Length: 89
Picture 1 (cartoon, rainbow, N blue to C red):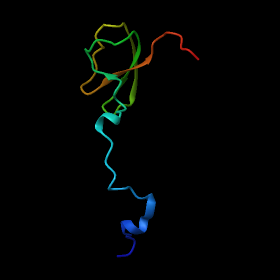
Picture 2: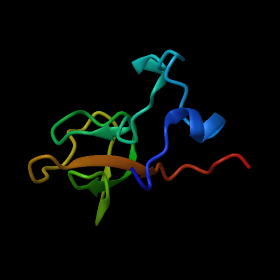
Picture 3: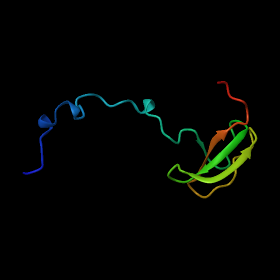
């Protein structure tokens, strides 16, 4: 068949199927730091609303530590963007 090559022809650039996969705990989700509406805020700061794909919607709210996260549409989350505290350089 024209255009098709076997895995042997691809060489070392191909994925090693004999190597075990990384454990799930080692794989970090881009949404690991997202918080659901109604959950207590882990720290005081500015939180941005993220849609179901994890992209910011442009809505930002200031939430105090321990306060419930603001309401948002179903599937949307909140992500900390600024604590308001000076950062060490």
